[in-house]
Length: 243
Image (cartoon, rainbow, N blue to C red; front, side, top):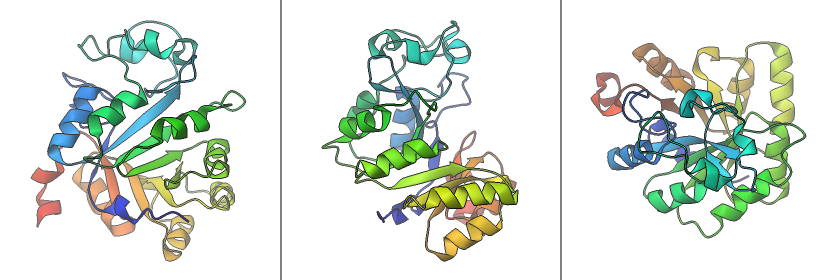
């Protein structure tokens, strides 16, 4: 297993330290710059552009964030790099641009957004882009085929399962995914505690939560997990975290 204990050390800004898409939009270099300045770890989403380049973008469709129709995977990284996010000066960045900006100053938690049957080369392209990067990085996904790809390719970075659910059948599937030798878990905070997570924590597997937006979620996270992925507030201004 690869050490992922460092994930507990600092709060993780969900899609960067944005302002809920008012002026600073999610998954933009502006949001990442704010997180770096504040000293927060950065969580963000990776999509696979049509030219085989990982780009930072959450949705499959471009409408919500770029106000145009179309599938993100049908555009090249250069084409995406011309599209405004939320009508701002920020464009869709590549993973390489994020790495150049961050330069190891804060940890990165990268979630791969897969599509079953259409992900050939995705995991490899992420690892290739990361090659030589000096900084803490963790990789995660809901998509177990991508997690297996990352492990089979010998990822030198921690690889984790993004997950949710409270039903036994979900836990069986999550347990099966963990057999790939995964190093951490990112779980929906309001689905904790549960038998699956309790067992994994007893094994020493670090657990972070998503997505924390209020005091209740903060309290619940630190009662049942090791760190939070947050948005919509400044953890430095929360007495619950500074007391």
